Image (cartoon, rainbow, N blue to C red; front, side, top):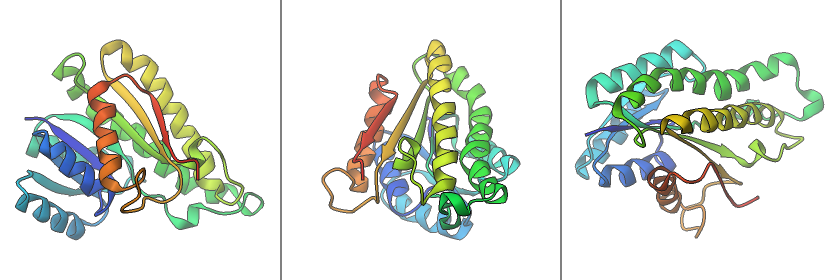
Length: 221
C-alpha cells in the first residue's frame, strides 16, 4: 500500500481527494497547521474505512514540511502521490501599488519554498517505487495563469510555483514521475457541476491515473 500526502488538507477539497484516493487503496497523510483539525478529519475518514493520519506542519517552514512528510512515510508507507494545495492567507492578497517587498515574503515562502521542500523530501521515495508511479500535483487559483491587480501576492508567488511545476514536469517526466497543475478559477462550490469538491477529486484522480496532462484549468472566474 502506498500513500497520498495532501498538503493543505481540510474538510473540503482535501477530504474529497482523501476519499477518492482512499477508495483506490491509498493510505492518506493529511498535512496542515492544526493537529486537532487533522485528527478530527482522520477520525472521520477512518470511520469510512480509509486509513488516514494527520501530521501538523507549517508550509512556510521547509524543515517543518520535510519532517511531516518523513513522519508520514514512516507511519503510512511510501508517498506515491504528493498534492500541494494549501489555501493562501488573506493578507497575501493586496493591491499591486500597496504591495511592499515585505508583503511578498509570505507568499513566496508559502507557494515556492514550501513546495520545493516537499518535492525534495518525497522524490527519493518516488524514484524507489519505479517508473510511472510517482505523481506530484499542484493545485492553484486562477491568478497562477492570469494575475490580478488586487491579489498581488498570490499572482506573483503562484506564477513562480507554476514555473517550478512546469520545469519539474519536463525533467521528472524523463524518469516516469508525472507532474500536473490544476487551476481552479474562483471558489470551490459544493453542488457546482465543475467545482464541487467531489468532481474536482475525480479530476485529480484522473491526472494521476492517466498521466498525460500537465495543466488543466477549471473555470476562468
